[in-house]
Length: 430
Image (cartoon, rainbow, N blue to C red):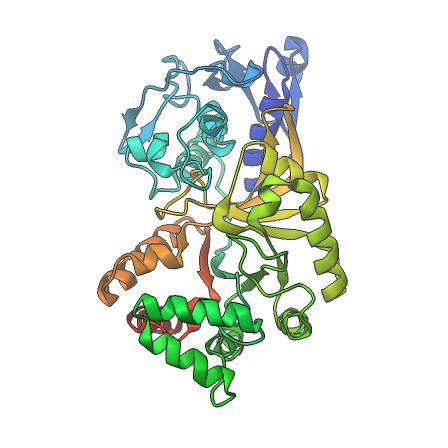
């Protein structure tokens, strides 16, 4: 067991130390503020404060972890052998910065609790983040810090660091519409068809007519063939299906549509399937409870996993709501407009509610790449290059590589033929 001495034992300190020592290193830790207990301890120990107590492993404390509430904090970034760091430490510290406070600042999304300029959907945009301003959004910075910390820690105690197991690729598939054309009302089909025509989407207009006449499969039905193929390749899949009332940003089929219900059941029989929380529920949490109950009754399983449609994250309200509803895992931690690591880590972590100053049971899973990020590269070679850069970067850290797609990704009859071809090669390692 590792004993950690700190002048005061605060929830923030317990949270971030347990994340690294218990969740990541698999070690047991205990805290004390009693000097006698610390000196008498014969095992591995470290102190976290203003000055070392002896010859123990020591990290200089910045002060963030003993504060309460959200304060204006000056963040001055400097270089540590090629890695950006902040919260500089005293010279006696075994690290040149407060690794724990800096990690806490990033992983809790501390900066998103401050006022910000939102986009049209009310979202926090990446260009306002510390990661973009200092060019480390594409790096799982906390994991890179941790990798160095582990090496320094084990060298200090002259022990061999354990080997972590590789994790690899997982695909997160959003299904905002289970069917592209089929099973919609006549009025909705007419409106969408006219919209295609006026926007010169001639191929989609005629494809819609052919499908509605029963002469061709709905393009989204092809996704099931892909599901089977990817399962054969042993690529983990998580499907998130929108099953909520129709709205401006929620354009799924009716929750009362029998074919819609049957389609969701079919998916859930093959792969882990959970709700894509509607845009409307992000504004009215009470509707999320009804949506979850309806989804649970449909697939005959409790809902423990969720993803937010349109990535509407409001701190701490969104995750606080998920926690109160008994959700155990969330897959919404990403930026919609840029690839990279919104919380500066690729590894899952518990949500810490800065409003209530407590750790919650909700586990956050980071997404670093999405369908839009890949499509924005335009050319197949650049799509593949972007994917491989992230895959190789995370493989070096044995970190999870979570990529978010939609069922539109597998539509061979849309304008994404170039993207679909590149995606097939990427996923089949051609």
